[in-house]
Length: 479
Ligand code: MG
View 1 (cartoon, rainbow, N blue to C red):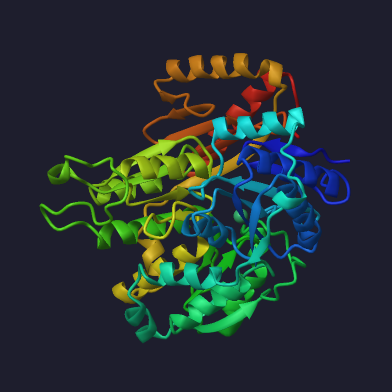
View 2 (view 1 turned 120 degrees about the vertical axis):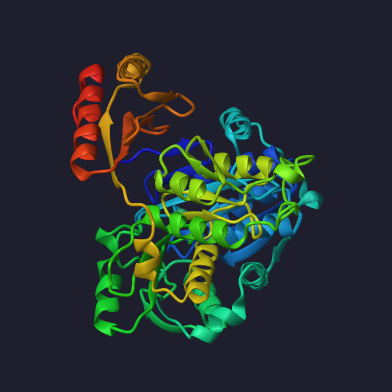
């Protein structure tokens, strides 16, 4: 039996094994207690188990005296944006994101529509463990309000940041694989608004995933084949089931790679939206640049495992680039703090603060289409103009009790080899031609090893040597 995964960002389990109505109820009660019986936005993806999980969430929240705004089936970015829009006290999204169909999960958000951070997550966990929940009396039980406007609000915001007429004029033909998930309807609506002709595959919102939902090369072969068969498709997009992540396929049916999604968007946004000389920040969001208007420059925030291509793009456009610990909450918080221009994670997660501080596949699509429209270039040409690196992601087992000694040893060896070192999130070593990030998992006795280099052989050798070192120092094998 799989175990229930509890982390600061949520609770994840296999339906009918570890994710039972009792478990969900407890977390609903805990979250309702944590936000002191406030107003909570609840949304879910299309998973078959979603309705069952939702009723337990509702019962837990209502029993703690919460009012519920039920958005029904929506994307994660739609739900998180609505938390802020409606002035709610928090939100729960019922989605196991890119995990296979047997999984489901609760993801917890604060009043800003951001994932709970480490401190907030610990507070919630402590309440769940103590099991002392708020209990509303009969006259304190509040209502479940249905809200069917959330997709309209989300679409208005996304379409508000692009030149809709310029995109419409190009009459792009777009292929779409929404993995039968929450993105199906809202994405088709957006692309139609943008004047695109649609070629759809796996766009029945029944939650029966036609392939492993992780938007990777192996899982998107149907989409690549469709583009090749159709011949006149300009670009193809794929989403995970809750539609925060975006993968792209070019006009010849070649998978672009999730790392390139943010690269394409960042390159376009930074090149097109530099402020006029002497002007202030284009957004006015954040307060990081107060008093420094004359010296303001655009900035990008990414995580420790995101491709170096973003750093190169930032440098090309005179923008600052900051790296933070892995996790949307870390990227979003830093973006807010410094008034960043654009940011996200290398797994296809694009964050544009003009819409919301959360990863949003619709934002990524709209900006890529605008980039194609304004430049008049094919997607393959836009990708071809980006710097190219080779990345390798893998994992190795390491018992938790041996972890810190292993990291310390690898740090010492890295220092001896002249690497620049960061210990903000596990261990990251940077050399002139390569980097490697060794990152312990929060939920399993493994470390992830991610590396990138100019050449394929170099990255294979580098990542291979670190995996071997983790195994030696941890005394374990490969998972
Ligand atoms: Mg997701």
